[in-house]
Length: 250
Ligand SMILES: *[C@@H]1O[C@H](CO)[C@@H](O)[C@H](O)[C@H]1NC(C)=O
Ligand SMILES: *[C@@H]1O[C@H](CO)[C@@H](O)[C@H](O)[C@H]1NC(C)=O
Image (cartoon, rainbow, N blue to C red; front, top):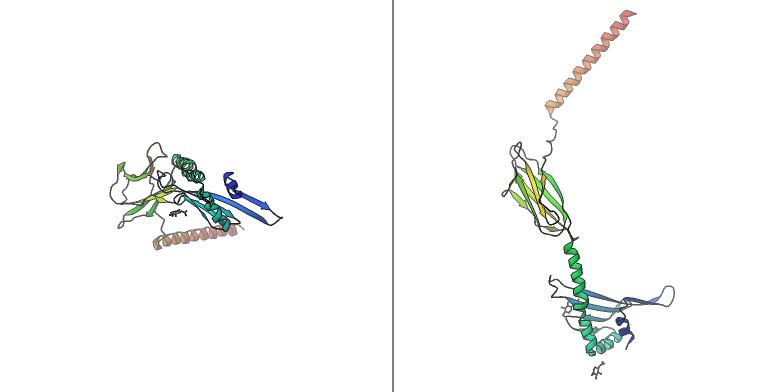
């Protein structure tokens, strides 16, 4: 039995032999389980053995054989490939190592449910000529399936709605956005409804349109200025009268 085989049997992941304070020989091995099919049927087991970062031997379960890289690696691979029992044992890691770990991992993710953070915002306030646009955004939810729709006075809205897909954030979570186009009417209630596995019931978020922005116009400025001027005149007059009274008493 070669030292390499011994190391592999012992499942040592990293071994370093220090020859001094700064120098050392590093042997490491990594195992990889690659799959894309949800039923794990395309599971591939890869094992790599490295010495001082250089590949020595690689096992690929799709090929079903060891491949050597260095002189030692090529010789060792030949020997291991000749050992049917060892080859089968390595091959079996698809079922004994990869699949159980993948199942546990997938299960943990699928059991996880994360509630969306829902935000309503105005895209366009709308005026006499243009309709208003209001956006309902759900952020950071998991799993992916979600239903986001609008209610107008409690009745689901089917037209004038533009929605995105569930967009992956890239961190397991998703976000979705839907925009409703509507003509604001007084006393009309607009709500966004979110249905998701993390909620026990549909969640309703009511839209409160932002108060119209206060606009300074020339007319208003003129009025304020006139008022200020008038106030000034009054204060000046009062001051003058007060002065007159004081001086007349002297
Ligand atoms: C394993 O071998 C198969 C068949 O040659 C190949 O398609 C695949 O890319 C290899 N996997 C890796 C990780 O090298
Ligand atoms: C592979 O096995 C055959 C038959 O058992 C043997 O003759 C040959 O020397 C072996 N090769 C290596 C590299 O061990």
